[in-house]
Image (cartoon, rainbow, N blue to C red; front, top):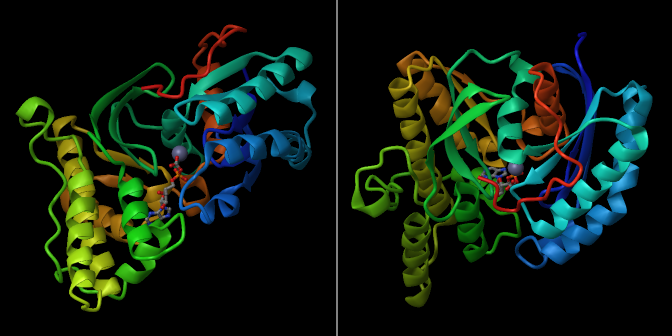
Length: 341
Ligand code: KG4
Ligand code: ZN
């Protein structure tokens, strides 16, 4: 079979996105975001996000088709994120994709959004080596994954036991008075500050049920320690050195993420680390990973920023991987799964 042409549709959170790929080549990529509508509430409001998907779905999908220069008839398959994500948001995308697949008589794949963050790196770096390690960091997930075969077999090596890294940044940012999403503000201020200014705990060396669990993360204590430090300063009327707080937080989180990722690569004998998710836009993490990668002889594949954040290309590429691997499409009545593992 020639390279499969796949339309990918994404609606797990606040981005309505669609893209068309031919194998590992991107033909179109359209993203509409409801982020600005959430900013004044300090976080994503599921009800607002779901309504925005209902409005944006048809315009986004039709623009992605138009930009690709193809017709629905030219598609080999359609793929859609079936989870994890906000239930109301997933319901809009999956219902729309089911209706489209049914009328266009095309096979439909309900895919895992987190695996999509791994798959998308193929657009920039080409196919995966076998048995690769992946670090996926975003507002909702922080996971180390062992990719045996992207289409069939991905194991969880470690995950966060509480807050995701992006969530931790967003919460501290809120405390410092930055609008949602705060991650990029912390990144910018961290570049100006002293990372040794306050002692931020390194998120987790002990893991589940008190046993050593070297590949899990915990960022809730990190957030609490920074919040306490800031609140104490505020309580006694002292200035809060915002740049230093951001630099110390960013350094701690990047050190833990990069350190555990390298350790996992060694353990699973992987010479490559795939990195994805919105938080991988973070400058401190990118720098730390590329330094550590060089030191340990591991090739770090971090895609360009527009492929790191949520988009339709990640869904379309994973769909193409499934078609190429001969995996059966999802049944007509496949469910959404907001807590998909
Ligand atoms: O993957 P994503 O777009 O959406 C989710 O699936 O969560 O990730 C969004 C998260 C937010 O928490 C945002 O603050 C964080 O990624 N983020 C950053 C940066 N850019 C986005 N965090 C730190 N530094 C950045 N430059
Ligand atoms: Zn995501």
